Length: 268
Image (cartoon, rainbow, N blue to C red; front, side, top):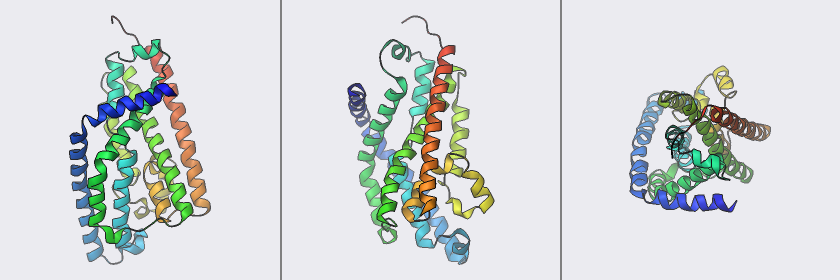
């Protein structure tokens, strides 16, 4: 455990060296967010009945996108999949095959160090964004909802990481995996609730999506906080999210073991 805590420490030092990059990335990420808020304001202004269809009032819809920004800052995978693929392609993983260091836990430690560094840099602009829309901000639906929300955030981060890690393992077989990463990102962006809350979809489509891991990468923790998932649905959703994390972890392990059989490195 000590060695991975040391990795987190080193990762923090490395990531904080690029703090200006994190700051600018955060600031520019608010541009499409402001555009979405303006779009929904216009929709609600000209279509008063849209709230009945979506189940969101205008204030709730704006608050939803505020939570999207918060969850993204806390859990999103940035460049971990690209870095893992580069390690495989350039032979950097050879050292992990010779040392008592588990590569998955090594990368997970770097992922958490990156999140800590990113949050420290994004905290100020995120606070400014929330302040601008403070009239729409509300507390969690209940104390139980807030506790489950915090647990769900951790599971969301793990789920995103394990899926990205498994996708990066394709580098054992393919020289360039960017196409697959972009396809996965496109599915995640639409099916996780980034672009719009899944409540605006038909019940059939929403039910189908909830058979995939994507809603548990963003929509579910937000729905918990807002009280959209409550009672038995709340605990059932949390259990399903946990099962998806376990499944993604197992899949990541399988991809690593199969990939190592194909891996070869020469020189040093």
